Image (tube, rainbow, N blue to C red; front, side, top):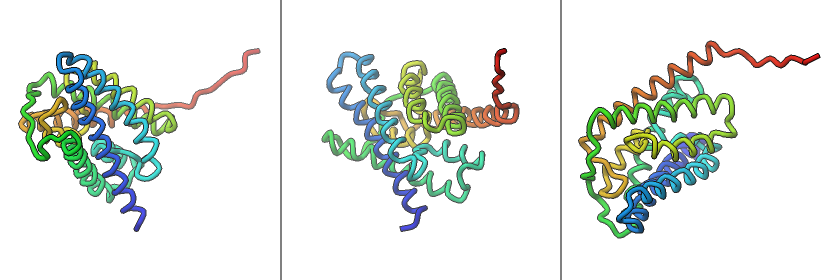
Length: 228
């Protein structure tokens, strides 16, 4: 098996496990706390953040652990990832995300194939996705350049917090958004609302890429001076 194929398999598995964490913890939280949406969201956020740390640490050496088409594209734009690998990564991420949702349905004895009816419409939620994705891509791009060892923790902490400070609960990922349209659960989103979310995510990612370029072009090394 070639290195490229190993990377694609790793990326698909990582993204599938991410969706298992996101959707599975949502199902469990809703079942255990059916009368407390706040408690369910807290459990969902913590489980997702913990999973992100583990997945990034485990899969980063194999595929980079992008688990997000926008991360793969941003890395290619910056020259950290080959453009020829982007289509394969995106397909692996989308396929892995869908498989992850189906696996959750099988684990929790839910219908394997279903469409969400959870409404998430309007400009405000799409704008929230732009904000969420700008923050995520900024942390990924700056962190991978300046503090790669800290990326698993910074990404996980940001997403855990963004579940709470964004109106959309921070999907920030087109593959995740599409896959979540296939579950009638706490984490779902109507298929008709997916384009607005993805548009907001793309705008946020573009802004983060531009910000990273500006910061890099104006960055100067820190100079320490000895105090007499």
